[in-house]
Image (cartoon, rainbow, N blue to C red; front, side, top):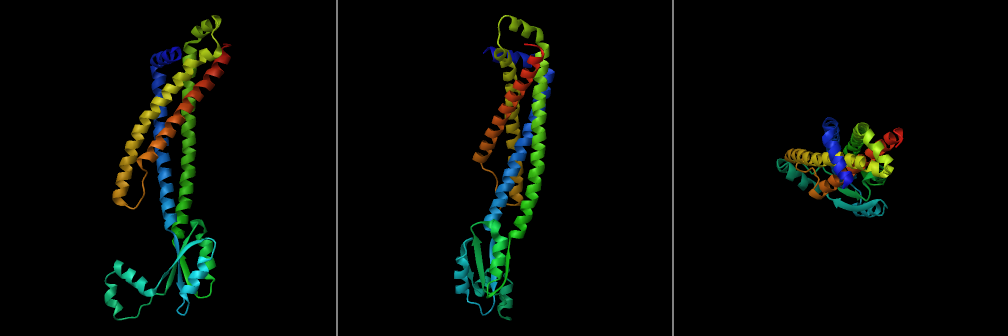
Length: 286
């Protein structure tokens, strides 16, 4: 209780530095939370696209679709192979473009029989497509992996930039907490010397400062959590109206992210306060 009461007194006494550290932490944690949610959401989008990646192998006119299906299904990396006849392919095309039904009466079906290949690991799509294309009876192959690969490269760049920004924000918050604790120690230097003279241990003296740092970052993280959730829900709602097929994070995901944010804030607050109090108390020979 002593540590808590002294920490609250210090926060009230140094209101300017308290507000400065709180504001810095609030901005940092809000950006950190939003960046984390966005990166997590992008990862879900890419995973969803990867699950839908499949290879389309177009057969030559005289090819045996059944034999090729069995041959490809024996590949270790293949999960499923499905034969799509040219009649079925044309029927599917007509569902998307109804006007083609009129042209069907004028010309023969130009589409080839196709094998739709689903892989166990979508990352192997390029190599597997080349492997299938070398088989006798395969005219050509195509797959949707090009877009996924481009997205992965873009996501990698965005993730690196976001992690760099997150690191800078965390360092800024840590140093801000350390500065506030140092100021608090300087203002109580005489009181701390008296406490040492009457037998107070270093750990007892450090306690209020550690609690002070914890209070600062915890309060900032809770406010940031509320702001971040509101901002994300607004952005997610707007995106889903434009692109309904995009997956968004659920309530459990956001609660997990919020818990991680609060835990990180607690570590930063206590860690920064402990490091600062240890260094500055040592300087004052306490």
